[in-house]
Image 1 (tube, one colour):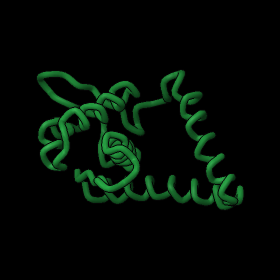
Image 2 (cartoon, one colour):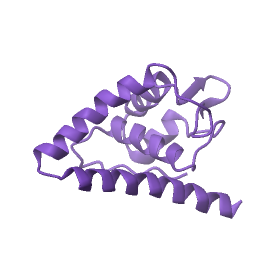
Image 3 (cartoon, rainbow, N blue to C red):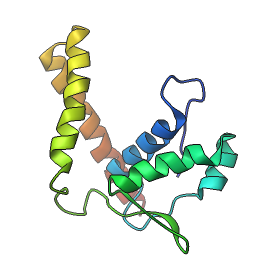
Image 4 (cartoon, rainbow, N blue to C red):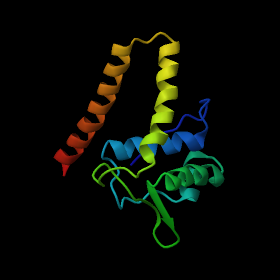
Length: 136
């Protein structure tokens, strides 16, 4: 799996790393048990401090998507097929979604356009997962 980050972005690198891993899980590119590069290796690849990568991995761990231990390193612990979400996931996610939807509304994006964008993003995850399954 190739992670891409924009070193010139206003979004912190650790957040970009976290976001790319979540997107890869959603698209079926990473599944439960998939290993991720070590923090030092990934930091070296991007030319950033390993604490930056560690912070991104720690966010994923706190969100229940990553398991980190000395022997196996960073490993995906949950994917799309893992069953229903943890009980407090939906309220937390709803709070973040509310902010994103408010941002779209404040910029004048119509309700229909927001819904179509959401549908398109979900379709792209499903299409990526289907394409990956076709390769297997």
